[in-house]
Each structure stands twice: as C-alpha cells, then as structure tokens.
Length: 548
Ligand code: GLU
Image 1 (cartoon, rainbow, N blue to C red):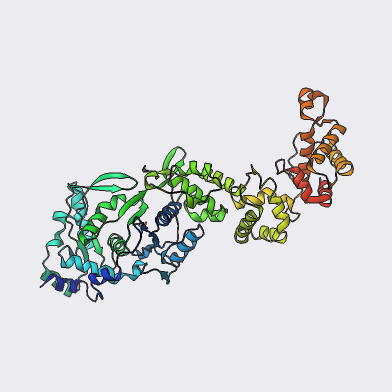
Image 2: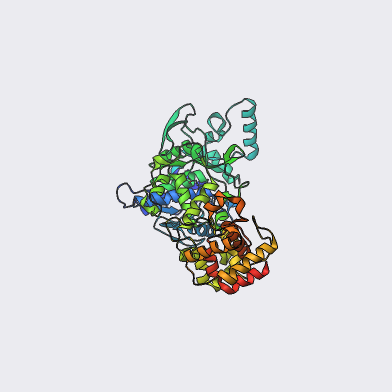
C-alpha cells in the first residue's frame, strides 16, 4: 500500500489537494517590506486589554508598511467558544478604533481573498495538509487511549523523565499501515500525530523581533495535528493559516514563546517559510508590591469593556497603549500633544523585551485627563452624550434637553492654553457638574469652610445679591465688587493686606467667595465661580441662596 492510499484511508473525503490550495491562495502582491499580520483570537467574547495592545500594534505595523492586518477566528476549541463571540470581539475592537483589512466581519460574513477566516470553516484545508504529511511519512495514526497516555505519564513521572509522547514512548509510530487499517476497520478511534524529527538535546536558534535571538531545545514530541473528530489542533491550524494567508509577521503575546520550537518545526515539516515573530510582553500589575500578570479573574481593568463602561475615551486608551507599546512614544506625545498618532512610527525594537510591562492605571487616567481637557466643548459634549445614552440614562435626558447650557458649563476653563483637567472619564462628569442642574441639585451636605455661622452666611449672600450682583458685569468688575463686599463686611478684600494684618479682619475675600460658591453648589471646589454665576443667572442664584 502506498502512503497516498494510506492517507486516503486515514482522512477520507478531502475535496482538494494541498497543491490546489497553494494555487488558490497565491503570494500577495504587495510592496517590498509590507507587513501582513493578523489578530487571531478565540471567540470567547472577552477582549483582554493585553489583546487590545497586540491588535493595536498589529494594525499599526500593517498600516505603516502598506500591508494587511486581518482577523482570524481560532475556534478549534469549541468548548471555549460562546454564542456571538465573533461579533462581540469585532464590536469591541471597533469601539477602540481597530478595524481589519480582511477577515471575519461577523459569525457568518467575511471580506478578503484568503478566507475562510474562521478555522471551523477550514477543515478540508487542514486535512489536505495532514494528508501531505502522511504521504511524506511525517505523520501517522495514533490509537493510544487516554488510559494508555496516563500510564505513560505515570511511568515518566516515576522514572523522572520528561513528560510527553516522544521517542521510545511514542509507540504508535511503529504500527504498520496494515495493522492501523485493521484497527480502524474494527472501529477504533484515532488521531493524527506528527513524527517529530526533533532532538530535544539540539538547540534551535530563534530570532524574535522584540526579544532578540534565543536558543531553545528542538521539539521532539509527536504533537497531535488532527483530533479524533477531524478537528485540527491550534498548533497545526495556525501554521497552515499563517502560510496560506501569506502572513509575514506573527505578532502575539509572549505566552506563545514556549510553543515556538513546535511551531517552527511544523512550518519546516510542511515545507513552509516561517513568518517573522514578534512576541509582546504581557501587561503586569503591581499588586501590593508584587508584580504579576494582569488577570482576567482578579482585575476588572483586564477587560477592555471596563474602560468602555467607565467612559474612558478610546483615543485616550490608544494613546496610553502606545506609551506601553513603544518606549519613545511618550516623549513624542509630549512634543506633539495634539499630534495624530498615525504620524508616529512604531518599531519592534522599541517594544519592551522584558517579562512584563506595567499596566499603570493612574497613568492611563492622567493621559485621559489631558486628552479630555483638550477636546472642544462640542466634542466633549458629544462624548458624554454617547456615553450617558448607554450608561446613565437620567443624566442623558437632562443634558440632551439643554445642549448649549451644558456645553457652556463644559467650556469653563476649556479651549484655552492650559485647560482645566478634571475628567479622566465621562463617568466623572456628572459628579463634577450635577449641581448646575435643578433636577439634580440637592440642598444638603454643604461644604462650608472658614465661615460656618448661618447668620453670617446669610448676611454675605443677601448683601451680595441685593447690593453687588449685576448680571452684566465683566469678570474684573465682578471681582472688584466681591472685594468691595468683603471690605464692607469686615473681610480683607485684598490678600496682601490680609497676610500683613490678619488680626484686623474677620477673614478675607477668598472666604467670602467660598460662601457664595458653596451656597450655589454645596461644593467647596468647583470650576470658575464667575462663570458659574453667569450660567446660573439671577433667578437660580436667588433660589439657591434661599435654600441655605
Ligand atoms: N488563538 C490564539 C490565542 O487565542 C492566538 C495565538 C497566535 O496568535 O498565534 O491567543
């Protein structure tokens, strides 16, 4: 029996040969140096912030070089897949501005000439290449049951040997074709394994674009490539996909580094040119002095949905991720605070090669504060509107009724050289300006400071509104009136006078304006008081004063 006949029996009903597939997916016609890369998640629906970093970098490298970034869904492990997992990943990445040139666009649709991009739709392709390996005597049928494998593991543990199906332990390598066929006819289940040519005591040299050059032991394990249900393993499927989709660069998390000898061996056995590799360090967290990987289970911020729910603008997240991605990005951002991120050239050698990059939430919020502070009042209003529409319906109703008033509030100390930085996320906004809306204002928990006596407070407020308030005053006039008011009531209108002779006064102009501020808002810290008075107007000011 020829190897080909044997392969036909092991994997019957395969529609195309591997040669046909090679022709169907020719080399891409792209400019020199174009990077073809991919983001290859399993459809679990969950997008880790580290995965966002990887897909962000992939898209940047492809774009910078006139290449292609495609989305491939790796669903060979059906147990991990969830319903609508594909669309939820796509939606989630899209909400951060990451879109793909090719690949899956939903559970059922895709774009591009190198598909299908969902592994579960590529069974015939994998089998065609598994047949190639069987024909070349590089793969075989293995019948070892779970019990037999457990037995092997036990023996290896007892004799303190490396675990796995390799060398003399890989007994099914030696089963003849005839015997294998007999067992198949008897209904025995089988899987397909490679006949690994590797020697564990040999080292292979690996050149990772981020980690540099490394040596690792060759793989000598007879890895499973096709499972008994005909589904390929991830390792096998990804090698074929990366080859046929003409991937030039594999950019992925460094948890895959230890699989590299296996992957490189598969490329060699299949006769494929291996892609270049760039393994990204994981995001870590300082957990009470202990540095550990950001964990899906323990850290809410590990999920990108956390930031969407908090209302951190996607642009701010991407700016932060860019600082993590390339060590020189931050200096560039300082020099180009309003610069377009597309003008920065990302480089593999500027990625962190170390075991982990610290995910620094306060720093992310700080970047976000800067980002939000530089938005125009229209843009910040739109951002808040979109956020609240989904996550805070009440506030949404309120601010959509009075867009101009809200924009004016948001514009206080904005659109100027050094804008006020008070919001790191849209969810902070309501907490910052609720008192400007009668629907939300509550006359309680007043944060009085130096002046707490009710009579004195009333006296200041009444004197102000009756004798000094004029809605047409410009800011300088307004302030000199507050100074006059202070002087009249025994407070220093001028801070210098107060500092020189504090005992001559009941307090100073800052104490007086604080009383007005707290009466209006209940808060001792607010944006510019003059602007608040202007926006509230006489009627509301009067009402608020009467509530004290
Ligand atoms: N499907 C793998 C994952 O979920 C991707 C590994 C790779 O990029 O090769 O992480």
